[in-house]
Image 1 (spheres, rainbow, N blue to C red):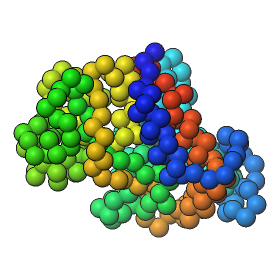
Image 2 (image 1 turned 90 degrees about the horizontal axis):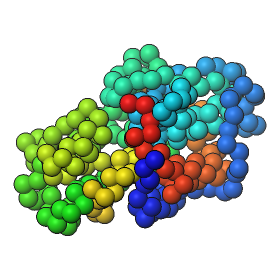
Image 3 (image 1 turned 45 degrees about the vertical axis):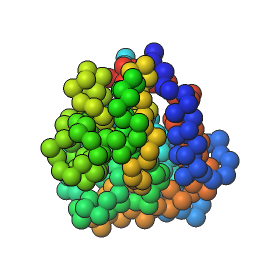
Length: 280
């Protein structure tokens, strides 16, 4: 099993937990089959369909040899439904199509590390932010050409990223267009292109980047310069009656320490699942 770069993982763990910290709580959540917590909205056992990619560490994934999904999104929505008295039904959905599926009412919500942007707000409603991540560059471990983000931005580096993401949008903005961008359907393919020498850098948020480093720590490294802070939220169909109850649950998870707890679980050094360990 490949392991995360522990120094990077520890630093990210501190940053993410700090952004979602609260008190102490050792309750990892339930199925949502019981009545809601006192003072919170009661959804009466309602089923809530939650779109997940199941290929986006550490937010959602299916481990090799298993059939049940796991990850930060699963724990978060099980706890939300425990608090609100609802039943989460996780539905595999591709990126970025999942945004349109929610916008069209085919899914109640989606949890896939989705950045809150004004453009997306035109077609979906967002919950309050539950986490903030930093976009950064990843380069070859032994590539001394790029000591800083400015070296990549102001040079002639070819940058890889994933289609339909804020990472792509930021790359286009920083590089003055798309000429130096190579877009892939999945970030894993972008990382492999970097390792193969087909591109010079990858732009990705630090949370997702951890999952791609794994044993590739002997091939790639992160440039520490933060490029942009992205708040993440759950999405809903415009006007959905689930938005406000979900916000109430997020506030409760923050104050109870639950966000702190799962932040440590999935973004700390104890999390060693990598893309080699999940179903592709």
